[in-house]
Image (cartoon, rainbow, N blue to C red):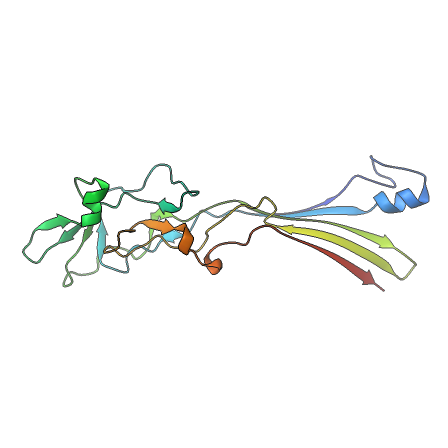
Length: 199
C-alpha cells in the first residue's frame, strides 16, 4: 500500500501560513510518501525428504527474537527396515513421547506436499517513508530536496530463510538466526538525502 500526502503547511494551507515571502517558501510544498508492505509469510519447504506430517506440530507462540527460532515441536519418528518406528535422538532429548513427523522408507512413494502452509516464515510489517519539497527558483528552474528512510522502524525481518527441513538435523523445524545470510534477511534502517535540480 502506498500513500502520498501533501502536508498542510505554508501558503494557502492550514498551518504555518505566513505572509512572509521567505518563510512561506521554506514551509510550503512539502509532501510525505509511504510504502507499507505485509506478507503472510513464506510456507515451509519441509519435504525435500520424504517426511509425512501426521499431527499438528506448530508451536503456538514462535519467538522471532530468539537465537534459535523454533517453529515446530521436533518430534520425528523414523520407519526402520525391520518395520519398527523409533524417535530421532534429538526428539527424545527434546522430550517427545510420540512423533508428529515420520521419515518414510526410501522405497515409499512421495506422499507429502513439498510445501506446507501450516508453518510460515517471518511476517514483520515494513515501512518505507520519505518527505520531499520542491521549490521554484525561476519560471523554468526548481530544486527538490528529498529525505528517504527505508525500513524506518528498523524491524528485523527474515522473509526468505527456510526452517531446517533435514529430518536428520538436530535443528529440524528451526531457524538459527546467526546463520541467516544477508540475502535472506532485510537490511537495517537506511536513511538517504538527495537534492535534484530541475530545469
